[in-house]
Amino acid sequence: MKNLIHKLRVGKAGVLLTMLSLVILTVLVFSVFRYYTETQPVFGGPIYKGSKESKGIALTCNVDWGGEYLPDMLKILDAAGIKAAFFITGRWAENNSELLKLISDSGHIIGNHGYSHNDHSKLDYSQNLSEIQRTQGIIEEIIGKTPEYFAPPSGAYNKDTVRACEDLGCKVIMWSIDTIDWKKDGTERIIARVDKKMHGGGIVLMHPTDQTLEALPTIIKNIRDRGFEILSLEDLVKTIEN
Image (spheres, helix red, strand yellow):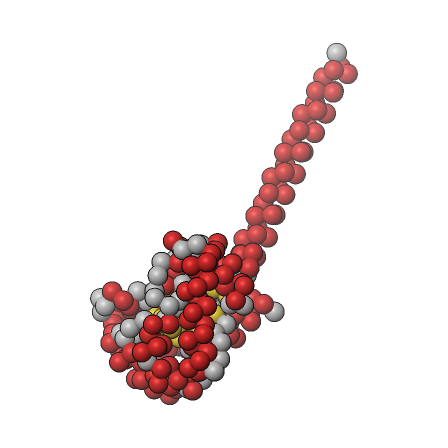
């Protein structure tokens, strides 16, 4: 009887030890995965932000309309010594080639925003490829450089979008700080959204609106006042690649 009780105790201890080991292993794996996904694009997928260890923040602007505000936005960025990333639709580029050249000649990154501002999450591989590749060709013809980054309109994408970008040598860029400026619900709200979400490695999404233009100097000042550095998108992406 004593031997039986002893065996039962040893058996229970073994089960408890095994369960404890599994719990520890699960926590460890989750912690490593969480750290990795907070600092790296998941499995080569879209990039939402740079390294959380970075003190850098990048400014991006998606352009399918609002060209009348871009020259003044460029002046503000130039005066502040900032290089932003402008994601351009192919149809906008075709109708605004001189303005596109001005943005590029000012030293800003030119990215791809698809041709016709489609919902890329509803497109198959060939449709995604066609939209992105068409815009690549248009932009390259105008500025002499092929975009290295693609920002899906409205942030909508699927696995075929990612695969098409990989085949074209593009990185998919998203955002972690959204101004939601397209709502045009007030300059102060645009500024407040950036202030609330501000973090190291952040990617700020903007659009060319009158309120964004008005908010931009304050956004820049607030980012710097909180100890962050405004980096180019290229340099921010390097923080998760190195």
